[in-house]
Length: 253
Image (cartoon, rainbow, N blue to C red):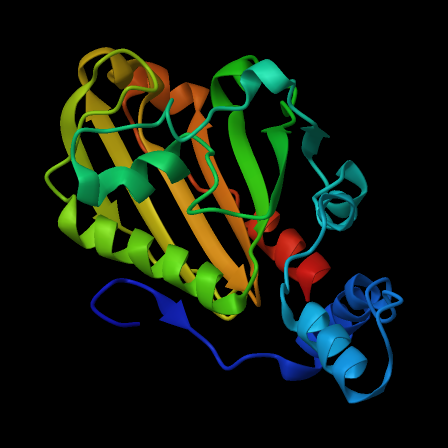
């Protein structure tokens, strides 16, 4: 753990290479011969194309995204297009807090090549107050052209958490008023991870606290932002659903 709150681990090289090499190779195959000649020039062009992007395609991300078969006790669905917010929706007047606001509202960081979303809801346990104990998590899986781009995005988030502890205004729901942002304990997931809890005043206090986790696996970022219906009503705390992070980490690994 460093001052930005980002936990880093040693890259799992074997798993990363096994996942990435077939995709990069496939991306370059179509450009291996464009009819302009062979020899070293053609091979160099093909090699350059293969190295141009490490980003997973949207189709590949769909296969890697969480499904109900991956986790027990949760309902998983693809959100409708109208439910997916953009960086404009999550805009904030405090530039240094932009990444924190984006993760809160399930918006992909930076400029990903592809992103897929899931909405995950905990299943009621049958108790009388079950509806008040339900958590809802927005999961975003985004791929970037390089691991460096993904790393830059998560490092910007870490800096935002440190610099936005006094809270910020966001345009995603009402105008909002400054609340607070606190760094959390980053999970042991991916090659680096960060966690935080954010609360906002004004109109947005109806949501209660938002707990978020982001981790990086190669050139892919997995984002999780969770709200609890019970916490929204009572203003109390709740447990972040770590099972979702563990399941997504396993699928990416």
